[in-house]
Structure formats: structure tokens, C-alpha cells
Length: 381
Ligand SMILES: *Cc1c(COP(=O)(O)O)cnc(C)c1O
Image 1 (cartoon, rainbow, N blue to C red):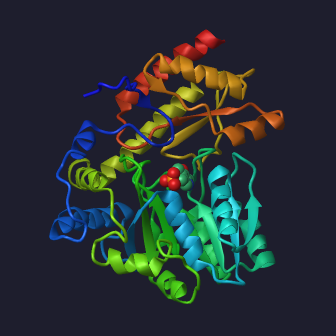
Image 2: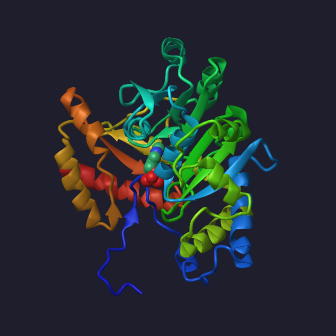
């Protein structure tokens, strides 16, 4: 199978992730026509299972869209379709992916205000209240799980506050959906954006959106939504369990197989519990070592990845060299998000590295990795 000298590494980055063998195999299932009845055999269960994983088994007031593209495509569509001319969008950023939402707003010509929270901190609701008061935004973007820092946010608290000020909350849940109960029905974002290649354990290629009824109403009043970024055009197709444009059929087959596995074999509750166990294992390992510290604040630590303050004397460059040492052990180590580490170092702080533990990773795989990581770090010291 592997005749191309491609390294078979176990990925401990924060997406993409290592695939189950069954998911790799599923790429070999038959191709199909996306406007044919065969499409329904894949996409009816895909849509149903996405609702189950989202906790939206009933209607819940949300519709599901599968986008060609990735998480960014869905985030861009949310901006393009839900922020009207003359309105302000407030982009609350806890790191690189919060910054991405702002970039998308600016690139699409929207009136955008960015609020940046220092890396390693989460949203402070009192501070958010003040920002909402000061800027009176029509739309607010929030990152559920900031992948560049491993910090989660309280989306229920933040969305409620945003609504209290009469604005629409949009949530980027790209790196957490599929690992935990994201409580969309309780948080009530106007739109929740995610994608396939992180906690769902699939290759990249589809973005996924959960869209509230009010978002559809809002989109009807927004002009210049583009085409593929127009939620109304997308909803027209998703109501037929189709994608707007031709989907990657191999990925659709893989998604059918993987989501069926998650819902019918592993079980959604068991999957969420496994991610908690992975997180706890990573935390216990960090806490067992005097040279390391957890970067994210207690109570806001991600279930899909652990950000670790690197040992004294570490530099971003040393972490990149360390990544190559880990490669020789068969692992793809994550040396931290470039810009976050450059900023930390500029402030005189130690850089971070990340341990991605999402998708279908078993506890045994993480345990082996931590053992090797610990041994290699000891060699370094
Ligand atoms: C990976 C990631 C994105 C970007 O998603 P793509 O699928 O690569 O477009 C956006 N937000 C967060 C929080 C992410 O982790």
C-alpha cells in the first residue's frame, strides 16, 4: 500500500489527526452521483448522526449544512451571510483562530472590531459586557476551543450575554465538535461552525454548520452574500441532504462510515468520556513533571488538546528541533503555534508546545507517546 516513501507517523498535532484503519479503507467505497439517490444513502445518515453528536436529535431549532471546504469556509459564510452593511461585528479573540474570524470579517469588507485577550486567558464576561455596551455590535464571534492556546470559553455564558445586548452570537467550534457535548441547544448561537478533520476523526474537506432559524431570517436581509458563502443557497441544498457543489465522494463515504461508528458503535457518551480521560492523562503527566506546566487556566482546559509551558531554556527553535527528534520515534510532535510562541517569547515568557489528543486516539496510544516524550525531554535537559 505504502509504495511512496511516505512516513507512517502517529499525529499528535492539533489536526489533522490519525485516521482509524476503517476510515482509510472507507475511501475505497464506490463513487456516486451527488444528485442521485445513491447520495441519500450516505448523506441522510450523515446529517442524522451530526445532529445526534450535536445533541440536536429533535429539531432543536437548528438546521445542518455540510459545506465543501473546511472550517474556515463555514466561518466565512457566517460572516458573509449574517453581517449586513453598516453593522458592526465584534470579534472576540483568545488567539490565532479568534484572529482568523476577524481576518475573515475584514477581508469581506465588514465593519469589524477586534478584542484580543492575552494568550492563555479565556473570555471575561464582565469585560465582554463592557465591549458589547461600547461597540453595540449586531454580530459577535467567539471561539469555543482556541486551538493555538488550548483554552476553552464558556459559550453558554458568552452567547447569553451577547443576546442580552440584542446581538447574534457566532461560534467557531472547529477543534472541539465530536469530542464533547457542545450544548448548542443550550448556548443558542445563531450559527455553530465546525469541520471534519479534528475531533470527528476524518480527513479535511467538509465544513459543518448548525444554523438557527433566526440566521436564515437574517441572511435574507443581507446583500452580497456571494454564492458558496450564501447560507440560503446552502440551505436549499442541505434540505435535500445534498451539498451545494460536488462533494468529495471518498470523504463522504468515509464520513458515513465514521459517523455511523461514533453513534452506533463507540457511542457518543463514551466518545466524550474518552476525551475527558485523554485530557486527564495528559494533565497528570504534565503535573508529574517539575519542568512543565499546564498553560490554560483551570476549568477552561480543552478536552481535545493540552498546551504545555515548555521547560526553562526552551525556544521556539529548540522546539522545532525537538519535533525532528520525535519524528525518529514515529511521532509528529506539535511545537506550538508559531505566532503565539513568538509573542510569548517577546514578553519574556516560556514558549508552549501542544499535545493533540482528539479523534479516535486510544488511551494506550497517548500513554506510549507521553512515555517517549518524557524520555526525550529528559535527554534534552
Ligand atoms: C483548525 C481550526 C480552524 C480552521 O479550520 P479549517 O478546517 O482548517 O479551515 C478554525 N478554528 C479553529 C478553532 C481551528 O482549530
